[in-house]
Image (cartoon, rainbow, N blue to C red; front, side, top):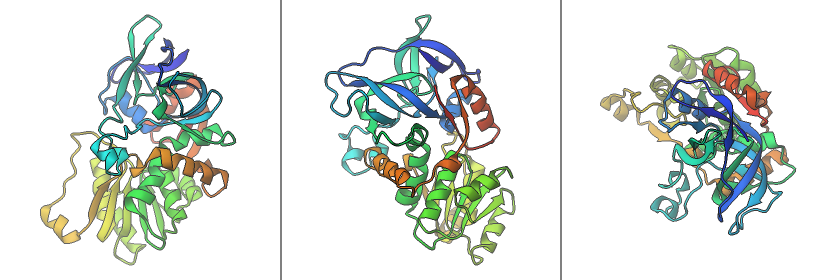
Length: 357
């Protein structure tokens, strides 16, 4: 089958023929029908996340179960599924204490699976490698969804939407009437914007370095678009009674933008970091500033969500029209166009590209 493979840090991904193993007793083969191009895939290419190579990219996808192992009870052939890149084990301390998004056995950057056409050992991103025609995954990594749910929308539920909506609903717990500023308007950031507006937040201020994101932000539900810059905190205060935002949500994963989110939040406000950054990118915060501001700094891992519970809930919201994902999808392409989609993401263009393998 064909898959998008990267062979080293900084190398250009290309479509190659690869070989996947047959499903084991507890595994499912899924024909991928739609896959989103996520910033974490770019992090695998540029070295922000350390991974073994050669590596099949992709972890945000939906498709159809085509073959199941003898012990699989979760799905049957023909079922439509969303892929889960961090299936919780349900046995560790974190899972037992209601925090499956922190499962100590989930979310490894890559897993060994299959081989290249030349017989080299192959790895797959976050246990999935979903920018491919097919994947073979543990049954815990597939979540059944209604067949009437469009594959493009279903794919986004597996990462961007689950992360963005979860950051608002489950991590920050945004309430009606509270003010929210969202920094970084990729697929996840736009999902945060939409979820904040749906929660009744007002104003919802969307921030990006690119003026081209203004239209996307307003379509997603922002009340106003602001350009990122040195005057951002002042602009936010001017629109929030001179205080700053009740919630500042950072969706970039850089020290500078985390610091900007910190400064944009009011005293006693909440700063939620959704973006995943480099381990050596430090955020400077003075001890007196931390005390005086009384702000709360949170991290939202996978939207603080339980995918088995939340993906079906989000699917129902898409089907009943209360969750509109159209503003998140700005490009569509085949597998051969996935590398160009990563290039657009690196330049900060558009939101989500959906790949149809």
